[in-house]
Length: 98
Image: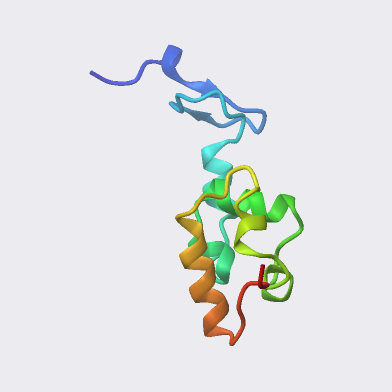
């Protein structure tokens, strides 16, 4: 049983996907824009977008936030914190203290 054209969702960019959720983000575009390196590359797409949408694209900026503040961002959950913590630690940095 294959996917019919009626099961495909069209996105503004012209891509089509069998994505089931109502989220307007195109999974094809998200995959294409995923960074190859850096802490944003180790996160899920929703967590990455949460940081990007809040202007967090460098270790220096990331280190100005507490874990609690980061968890307030829509799309960033508890599973992302250890990944970010390790990435910061590798740079000799850490989250802001609460």
